Amino acid sequence: MADPIAEAAQKHPAPEGLTYTYGTAGFRTKADVLDSVLTRVGLIAALRSRALKGQWIGVMITASHNPPGDNGVKLVEPLGNMLQEEWEVLSTTMANKATPEDVSQYYRDIAKTHRIDLATPARVVVARDTRASGARLLGCLVDGLKAAGADYKDFGFLTTPQLHYMVRCLNTEGTPNAYGSPTEKGYYEKFGAAFKNALKGKKPSGGLTVDCANGVGGPKLTELIKYLPSEDEGGLKITVINDNVIKPDSLNVECGADYVKTNQRAPPSSKAGPNDRCCSLDGDADRVVYYFKDDSNVFHLLDGDRIATLVASFLGDLIRQSGLAEQITIGVVQTAYANGAATKYVEQTLKLKVDCTPTGVKYLHHAAEKLDIGVYFEANGHGTVIFSHETLEAIARHEARNPGQKEALDILRATVELINQAVGDALSDMLLVEVVLAHKNWTVQNWLSTYDDLPNRLLKVTVSDRNRFQTTDAERRLVKPEGIQKLIDQEVQKVRQGRAFARASGTEDAVRVYAEAATRAEADDLARRVADLVKAAGTV
Ligand code: G16
Image (cartoon, rainbow, N blue to C red; front, side, top):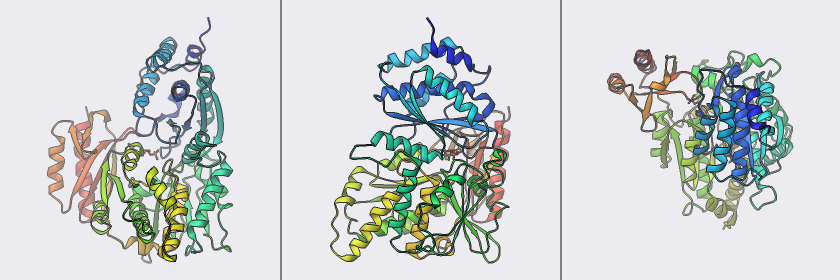
């Protein structure tokens, strides 16, 4: 009897000698070795949907900030969250099965051990970024989906957060928790209207230049702009740059959020003038960082830490002004990459609790879910705000006692709508920042002056085996290779206000080194010395 699962796996055989891992953000590597992974992800997606009684599961084909030659794939749970960890393990095992027969057997094993009825419908929604390899990989995925008998909807090109949005909308349609209409138009209408309502007549000052990393964010932002209030209507002037998706080789090259954050400089193509507000998205538009050059042409970065502090202080004010402070508390979730000055500002000035988790949206999201309002951002610009069910109810139920409370409550309710709670979304985050700046009547200089970042440096070190580097304490300390942490500690002691750590990237074949210190020279020196230690310990 024909076995469609084995046939699909046979059509896209796994290359020999490679081991795949479901990493920080799914499978991610050179695009030309991903065909077999995509087919198998199709099988896993179908099983996951069946395990959840036919709810929609999302599959996004993207390698986000990675170079144009890479690609990747990640799975999205029914409410738009990241895949459950247990299923990451199943996905990794499936990706590494050697033969088509092994793949088919494992498919049935998963069904058996997880009591999945293979007759249950499976529904999968698919999208991709603008990488050249995306079309071929989509074909491989579809072969897996068809072999597993899944129904699928292909949305073509979407930003990663748009795909998360579609998944959540499809699964909540017609229920009291309906999130929106599961179409691109629905997405633009929802966030466009929320932006207008949250501004509540305040006009953003000056324009905003948005670098789209030559990725899918470019055309999607151009579309979103059509749904935002025009300049004449008191809206925002947005200038879109680096939106060339016709030339996929330009993706993330000398532009985009990762380039700006890592190099601490504007994209060379930027023509923005002194004090002009600018921001950069990454290749799939789930990260955003802000920046500007001052009158002396000095570059200033307003990264994810800054967005978190800005938004947390704004929400804190709204909660107080609406009379909800006794019922609702706010917390901030960061990773080890958060600047020490940002952590201190949140704890000492905003007087909010800070949690630190390992890198990866899934960890921050889980920690934020435990809070009434969880503001979570990675320094690299990935993040969002999530509101607990009780908090949303309290905000909806609350009755304002005076016009001041009503004003704050209206803005708070519109702000909740503006935030993509399924996942960090560069476009929604960007509109949120614009709303906060407009209400506070702040320039980028005002925003920058809230605290002084400690000078810091991020380096990427190539080693022969990055898996040798194992961490503990939310990735702040290395337990392996043995002895290296002691040497790093010694280097940290040599500089003022020093802090440094090293960890293996989960998306690139490298070890990342972060260092901060009282001065630029000390931070650079510390980063270089730690990188040298990593290089020596990582070379077999
Ligand atoms: C992904 C993850 C982020 C993470 C980043 C870098 O982002 O979603 O949570 O911060 O990778 O991770 P790593 O340091 O492990 O390489 P993106 O924007 O590339 O999807």
